[in-house]
Amino acid sequence: MAACYHPAVTFSDEVFTDLEGARAAGMWLMLCERGKNLRVEFRDIEADDSAGRAHWEAWYTFSSTGRPVHNRIDADFDFRDGKIIRHRDRFNFWSWARQALGPTGWLLGWSGFVKKRVRLQAARNLAAFLEQHGQ
Image 1 (cartoon, rainbow, N blue to C red):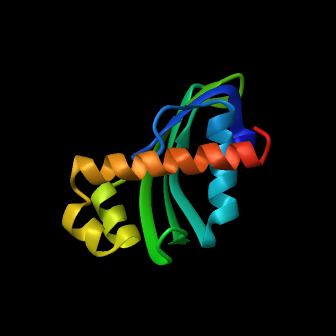
Image 2 (cartoon, helix red, strand yellow):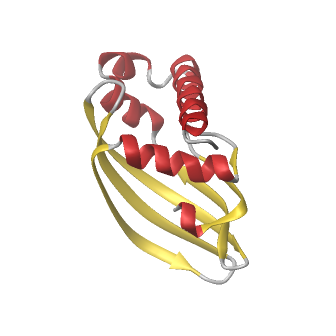
Image 3 (cartoon, rainbow, N blue to C red):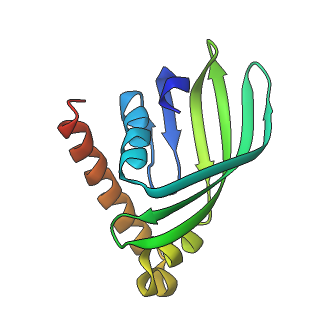
């Protein structure tokens, strides 16, 4: 994904919100490096010169808990200069939280409190990863 991104790209999903440029590209590097047993499939790809969309699914072991996750994602893209300038992924956070976090996700994954906690931890993890990799 990082190779497909415009230098001024913006990325957002249910966990990583409002990433720009190198931080968005770095997120993919971090997820791929840390993802255990990562498998990705995609389908329903539509695109023209200015925009696109796709459905993709990821299977992996969530590194923080060791729990298996199957995440179903719908992606929307805008293009500039042949690269992705805006990337928005959407998925059911509660479904993800039930898998990734176990009982806590099942009971509270629908709440803003859990979503905020997950987002803060993800932001910390990304900042530490980027610092470690000199970005």
